[in-house]
Length: 215
Image (tube, rainbow, N blue to C red; front, side):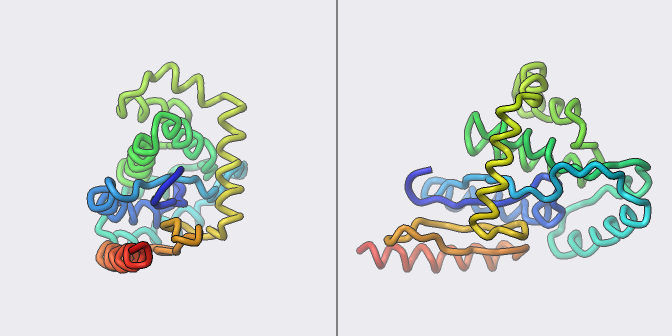
């Protein structure tokens, strides 16, 4: 992406990214014309094959209480009782990348839909059929989207995202950067969850300084 923009390293099955969703909405509303957001998949647990033990599922659900209190987002706790659930984040990440092929905005919309489906509605976003249903709800052709999810090129494209995130040092999610500066570098907005007020205030300061440097 050319010009001033945000790069948002996230994962569709990252609970803190789900909590950060309202902040992304605020960023898009406030800076969308100035600095669009490019979503890049970070790779939370891609390729996981072992079912999550019950103790781990229940511990994860208890952790969601903290996120709900901080971010004000709802959670469905049915995962705790979902025996045999494999927490493989790769299928949902591929779906976001597939939606992003249309536009970064479509990718962000799909990411938000996947977050809400998994965390607020308890839908299994490791299932390609569910991912295709979400795509249809976003206006995509369901059959075409479902077929494209199996494309080897899409898998490679998604894993390139993971590599980009690693090279950028985005080892935790959400991570948000903005730039480029006049020297071509990027500024860290947040690594990990922050409230909307904190993030917007920081971006406002950075933009003011960047405009001053360009004056």
